[in-house]
Image (cartoon, rainbow, N blue to C red; front, side):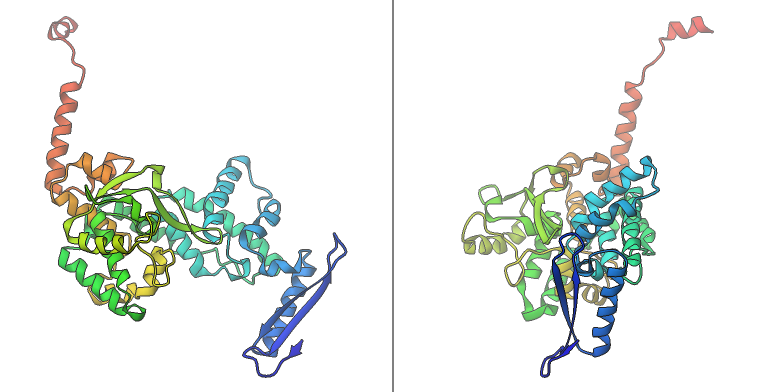
Length: 385
């Protein structure tokens, strides 16, 4: 341990070890504010080495650490359990959390990851299997001394899932009531953001008026907007990935066209006119970076603002519910609404219809089914008697 005066973290702890495979002499250091913290770090590195792993694993990213210890983490699993567990690790844990150092995984990080899987409409069993393999990997991290507790043993996610199921049953209840409510929200979020960045208000308004996900708003490029028809071709979305936010195809891998209404066209025109090229992002953060639902939440103090406005349960995804509800109430035909939403199932789209309209359509569907049902000829019925 070395003391370096005049620095915010003056205690520099350093460990050295010999790599058992290559024989190379290696070292690692870490700066702390107190000697106790420095000694605690050294002790943790010693525990890691005594556990039989490379001491550098204390700062190893979760994806790399999981790959190293996976044979131990999955021991004893039956084949029918192994496949969904490994799929959960590959398809959800690694893209969402794999870039984070194992020792920096917290309950909050896992909570947000679980909610993102639920929001992506993963089934309950899929989320359960994904959490199960994460728990197993972090159990091994505890044995190795990389972490001191298993933060993947989160509680309450089932209640979050129940909320998501309730949302699917009645997404209309989550929508903002009016255009005035939307503009009030956008202005309040802008006012609470650092330097009153107007872009946050524009993002919120555009998302609601196009019934889009925040990740899709982040992915829109200037060339995706057709001024002649005032439509937006939704081609990509921004999502968490290894190393940070990445762009990928839309959910369902299907491009779709969305109308841009008159109320937001002046704002869109201003952004298009200032875009340096067709590939330029139409919406970015204050420093020009990609945005996500978490970035929007933190930058605008979302939770505090919506509570103050009386919408304490409003989430960023509810802007999409708002747009689809408004379109349904405007009389947009359900099949057109389905294309705008990008829903794979017509049943999902029908949940946005007004109850009276939905009942009428269901009555028509019932009549069609009745007329198409096979019938026994009357003469045959008499013979049977």
